[in-house]
Length: 235
Picture 1: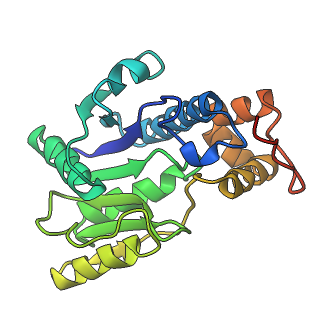
Picture 2: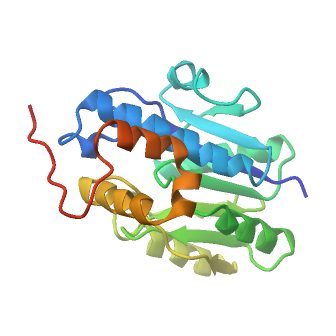
Picture 3: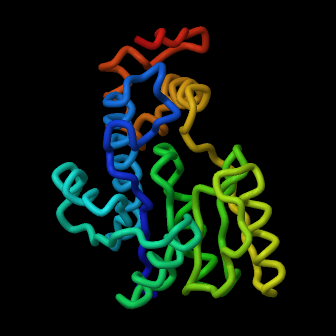
C-alpha cells in the first residue's frame, strides 16, 4: 500500500477564494483565511501520510501557495471543466505516480479529524469498500476515497448543490461498486459556516489543535466569536 492524499486547492487570491465570505470579510481577508484553511488541512493530511499532493487552480496558483506550505509536497494543476473532471485528473495523476489508495480532500474543512481519513484508507486498503465518501451538511462531500480512477463515476452530477452527494452515491450503486459513508462534516463557505467554526474552536480543544493557523487568524481578526456575534457592515 502506498497511500496518498490529494488536497483540492483554490489559490488564495482576493476575489477568487472564499468569495461567499465577503461581506462581511473583505476580499483580501477571505483569501487570507482561505490560506489558513489550506495550511491546516495539509498539516492534518501529513499526519496521516507523507504523500500529499496539492491540486491547485488557477494556473498561476502554485506560486501563490508554495511559499506558505511545506517543501515536500507534490503539485499538480487542476484540469477539467468541472469538479468531476478535475478530481478524475488529479486521481489519475496520483495513480500514475504509483499511489494507491488515494483520498481527495477539499480545503474548506480545517477541523476534519484525521481519524476519518485513516478510516477511509483502512477500508480501501483491506478491500472493505470500493469508494469512500464523507458527506457535508450542505449536500456535497469533503472526502472521496478510491483505489484508482473509476470511469463514469462523476457523470451527470450537479456540483456544489444539495444533490451532489446523492447523485455520486447513485452513480456508485449503478456501477455495482461498494460505498462506505464515513461521518458527516461541514465545509466553511458562508458566514453561518464560519460562525459554526468559531463556536467549535471556542469549545473544542481538539479542533483548536487541528486548526491552529485558522484559530490564530480568527483571534487576530476579532472573529473568534460567540453565537451572538454580529457581522460587520460591508464598506
